[in-house]
Length: 199
Image (tube, rainbow, N blue to C red; front, side):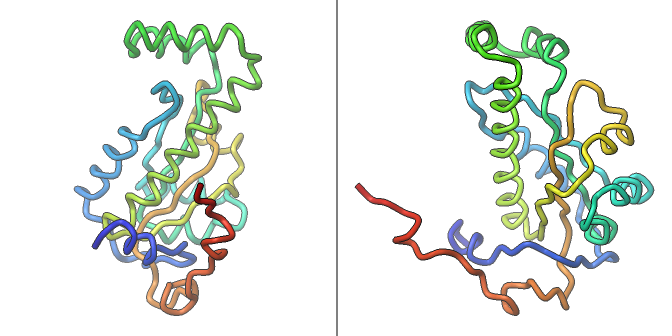
């Protein structure tokens, strides 16, 4: 199946088969795919937290607004977090980025207000979400992007201080009776000519 067919087939799962586990090799593939996500100047200001433990998943589900049921049902929850402590992230930059990339980032940081820098970081994490959603369907998995989480409570539960959770993605196998399955609720998008300009 080519990429267009995969995107045509993909839908946002509203209910999951709680008794159907994801093969671990697919989870490992998803980890590596997210690691390879592109970002502006290759800055990679993110942390991806993979939660399979049912007890931890339940704690996070309880502070996930209207997404509680989906998280409890899905076999996997991936949390997308952004670098929030700039001093801590500077240590990552100094230790892990090549000199040219490090110098480029330091110039941007020196001329950019902290709030704007953090907004730029967050935009990079949204790129990773797009990669994760596409990768999931390519791996034969269903997924749900969720901005409806209580970020501060996620941080407390996960013991995070240097990174801030932005959103999460439930991953698993959609329930057969999910009303949002593509064969039940066809994909609805604006017309091509309404969203694409060709020059």
